[in-house]
Image 1 (cartoon, rainbow over the protein chains, first blue to last red):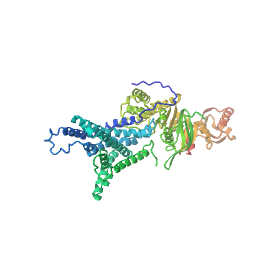
Image 2 (cartoon, chains in turn purple, brown; image 1 turned 90 degrees about the vertical axis):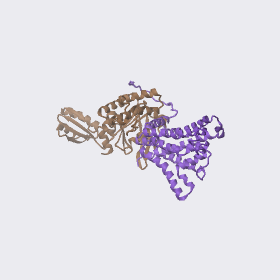
Image 3 (cartoon, rainbow over the protein chains, first blue to last red; image 1 turned 135 degrees about the vertical axis):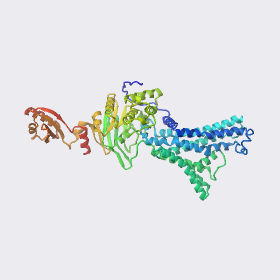
Image 4 (cartoon, rainbow over the protein chains, first blue to last red; image 1 turned 120 degrees about the vertical axis):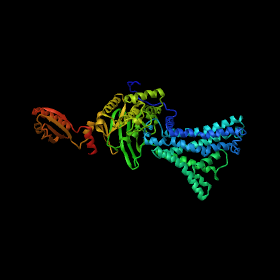
Length: 290
Length: 309
């Protein structure tokens, strides 16, 4: 049991020590609280399944003769090129688990603070609004990077280990940068996107639904519009299609849709800018009386 | 320039079309100052401006000469206890406090010591490992108070800190807040419950509809209210004989007798002169005075007069 000390008053004057990363306590709390949720833990564990499957694919591709009886006609599939990594990082194998993980871990990031009026406690501390947003974004970034950059680099390392040479890396020296580039793209986009949705309500349950709806609805909208008008540019309405278009560009692969990848980058950047504007308005320590 | 700890100059703040504060200028020295006003008067707005959580639309507010808006390093010296509950309910009291102390850059040992000390002070140490979800209203209020003092701030801003507390906890907290004064801290405490403020301090700031109505000690503020004569109640052995001595004096405006037959209630605009008169009259008439009270020389009366009730 701690002892109660007799407190003596010491006059406060100037130059207190600044914390180097004032946003870190927010990030730490966000990650800690995410792991308290059972649904999140399940979704997080399951989101590593694609990485494991792709890892097995790498192993099999290096020992294709041993597994020929099991993978009839799969030679093409297991021809490891940058496209294999692009497939891992931009297809639904990964995007869907990311959406699930973030829906459970990120929905409450700002919504819970709004619900519990915690912003006024945060902003009564040595903390700027930018630190707060950065702290929350770092929670999203932590999970996205764990599911993208980490497995991406690990897969590349295992490819070299299984092959027993650096030939693959010498053939595609830009591949690590592509992996990191797509990871950065997904991190930035999801960080802004999740925080935008989280700031729209003080009920994290609604935000979770909103996260799923935004992802799926945009894709459904694209499907419907494409069915009617048959214009490839309508893919710009789909979050998934834009990520895939931008991802294919960063991996130097054939673009899945017949328009310049720059448009997809613009759409994703536009959503990030919109999120920044909304966050600027919503993240404040006081309720606005209308 | 005086050595005011908190200084507001022509401070105005509005939310859309709603006026929060209007042209507020005041200085607050160290010690305890009560911010008094009905709900929606602008107390919380003022406190949030002082704690740097909002930017004033007009004017400025400084703490120790430094503007409070966007000055994170200044907030180390300020402790703020907001009125509404403001915590995650899925954390324990201990986690809540140590988590907030992280923002101040303390190491683990320092955090533990400060959190322990603050929880001891508010009698919550034994409940530190319980989830806040399971805390009673009083306990929530106390843990909120604990987070405001855990980093040992020089300036403590308390928005309705006593609401929801049982009488015993209330008394303890009042004692603790009063001890801050002797430590040289500056405490700004708001309430719409007048006896709570009276129990804490005589120095008040009366705020109503976003404007400062009065500021100073309670008797001083009462003196300033000229529209309402002072009410003085005199309990004596023969109130009517006493009253006959006052009839001719212009210092007395009105006299009534209480039904008990022993109390004379006098209304006067010149209180000091009336007291001189009373002493003289009692001596000359040989009337024994049992008790003299000023029923309207309290915060409730001052408040009622000022807000025009």
